[in-house]
Structures are given as C-alpha cells and as structure tokens.
Image (tube, rainbow, N blue to C red):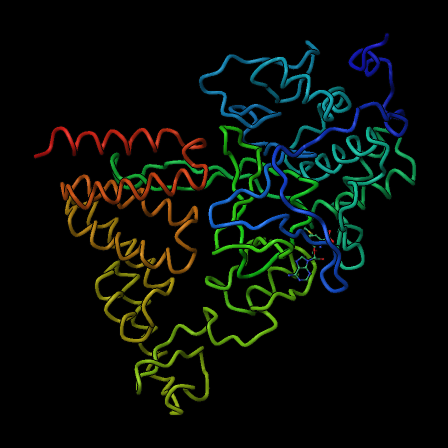
Length: 481
Ligand SMILES: C[S@@+](CC[C@H](N)C(=O)[O-])C[C@H]1O[C@@H](n2cnc3c(N)ncnc32)[C@H](O)[C@@H]1O
C-alpha cells in the first residue's frame, strides 16, 4: 500500500484540493463541555456537570499551529518545546532550506503532514512577513485533508473582518496562490480561513524568568511562542468577568490548552466563559469594547458590558468628601454622598504623580495615589511592585517583601487568587520572604505558592520554580533556626 509520505513527493501543489487522506483525529483528552447556540452570541460552551474552582473542563491539542519565526532556532517547529537540552531532527529533505528543527522524527513527521510537505520546496516563503498567510495555508491544507474547505465550524465574522480590504495581506495571498496554482475557489477558502484565524486563534505563551538590573533580581515575563487554533476551545465565548481561565503548557506540552474554572462553582448547563484579553478588573468599558471590536470584530454582550459600570475599573477614584464613594473620571456626583467631586484636585494630583514617576520616587507616588484612589487598584499594585523591586536591588529585603505583599493583595483582588498573575507575584514574595529570613511567613507563603502552581498546572510547565520553592522550604526547615 502506498504511504502518505511518499505520495506527497509525487504530487504537485495543485493536488492539495484533492487530498483528503488524514483520518479524523480526536484533539481533546478531557472535554466536559457541550456546544449550545444563542441568537446574540452564536455558539457557546456549557458545563456537562457541576464544577468547582480549580476543576479542568477541557484539555485540547491544536487543530493547526504556527511557531513564531523568532523562536524557530531554539524551539521544535511542531510541538514548540525548547530544544536546549534535546537531540534534534531536521527535515527529511536534505536540501530543505527552511529554518525548521524538531525534537525528534515523530515531530518531524507530524510537522511534515501539517503543511511543511507543501512548503518545503519554496524557501522564499520562509520570511517574517508571510507568517499570517502561511498559517492560513496550513489551515487550508489541514481542512482539505479532512474533506473541509475551511476550519470546521468556526465563525469568520467575514462581513466585519478586514482580510479582503487589507491590500498587503491580499498581495501575499496572491503570491501563495500563484506558487501553488490555487483556484479561485481555493483563494476564497484561504481568505475565509484567515478571517477565522483572526477571530478564533489563541496566542501560545510561556512564562520565563528574565534578569533585571542585577544578576539576582529576576522578573517573570511571558514569551509569545506562537499561535494555534483549537476546534473545541474556539467555541468558548468571551466575558469581561470570566469564570474560567485558559492555560498553556500543562503536562510539559507547550501547545496543550487547558481550561480551568477560576470562580466559585459552575452549575451543569451554565455558560463557561473565558476572556479573550479584556478584563473588567483591568480595563475600562471603552477600552474593552474597542479592543474586542478591533481584534475580534464583535460588540461584547457580556453582563459587565451591558450593565452598569459602577464596579468597573473606571471607578478607581475615592470621593474626597465621604471617602467611601467610588467615582469614575469626571463623574458628576458621588452616588454615596450625593456631593459634586472637585475634579481639578484629582487631575492636579495625577500630574504630580507623573512627575514623581519620572524622578523614580515611588514612595511619593504611592502616597499621592493612596490619597486619590481606592485600595486594590492596578496603579497602586504597580507602584508597590516597583518599590519591591527597588528595595530588592538595594538589598533591603524586608522592605521589598512588605511592598511585594501589598502588590500580591492587589493582584489577587484584580485577577483572582487562582491566576497566573497571582502565581507570579506569589513566587516573587516567596523569594523575598526567604531572602529576608522571615522563616514562618516564608514557609507559609511558599506552601501557598506551591498549591497555586499545582492548581494552575504551572508545576508541569515551570518545574524549575517548584524545585526552587522546595529548596527554599527545605533550607528554612532544616538549616535556619
Ligand atoms: C472564538 S468565537 C466563540 C464562538 C462563537 N460564538 C461561535 O459561534 O462559534 C468568537 C466569536 O463569538 C462571538 N462572541 C464571543 N463572545 C461574545 C460576547 N461576549 N458578546 C458577543 N459576541 C460574542 C463573536 O462573534 C466572536 O467573534
């Protein structure tokens, strides 16, 4: 029987439209959600049973994926794992000039079938500005292999999406179409797939430690490894105040997507929502609406956007008369005491805050912010984080820990206790408490950090952090008196 790999060698690019060989694959390992339909928000996912905080409702592998060009030299082109310590495999075609490497032959074979077989002969396409169109092309090949013309069942919002009006993208599509002799029909499919990708793809990110200021102060940053489309996860609708969180890299697999419940409990049949980026705790209603319209082409219908904005992050100002009322910028009256706020004072104070920020006098910045803002707002959290970093660099670990603790409180209030952001702040605080030798408090914080890491699956994606936490804990228990 002819093997698929050898068949590819005999085919010309024009045969893509005919290829329907790959068997239907199951991409999910855990799937506890069911698709439902609504007239305003299209399809959405509901819970199959009762879920509690920390439960996993979905684990899924990508339908299509694309490693960012700037990571091609040090990450597997198929599975995105870092190649620093692994033996490598190259493309089966000895003369292949694409900048692609793999962990092993299995990943090479999967990468070959996922589109490299077609692209291998055209090294001129391996350039940064073709990334989006090449990703669409992989979507086209993968969909055709399953007898579909576009990514199966995903929305494209074609009317409001801007692929056709985007001349630069159309030029690249035409370049690809001429190399692969794509028919008019195939070009239409490709345009639709690019629109689907814009509405449905996830950015695959990985946390990484980056040195700042001095060799022992480390900041946590997230690296954007690439992009992927997941057929089941693409059906989760957005909510600016979501009940679940998307995590990558659990089980040591950077492309594995996991959806985890982060709030209270979800009843059977309840809509499971995630955030596409904008959050009620972090962005104003205007900012959220703008971002969702520009990036995902829809007007958000979530409760936070439809309802009253009293509790939104717009309302960060503290009424100077009753000290309890929450005000959004230029609000005419405080709803708590009915008095008219004196906005000139707030604006003058904000100008002073900017001046002290320029001078890097963060203690003054914090003092002024505490005058005009309520506790637990993002601005205050950021200043406390800066102060923690400044004291840490100058070796004043107790003070650094004090401000890091405050920054963690804000992060928990904004992003939730079980969130990547809180886990990162907890890691920082654990290290600072350890370095300032506050034994009991450090052990307590280390334990809390380890639990949060496990709940979020970060123990698998960042095992080095867990190792560091365990080392610190052992040191405190067995060595420090
Ligand atoms: C990733 S898809 C989610 C699944 C989609 N509802 C479907 O029918 O396949 C994103 C699209 O769903 C719709 N959508 C998601 N969240 C929404 C929300 N909060 N309000 C209105 N539409 C929403 C928008 O059309 C958006 O472009």
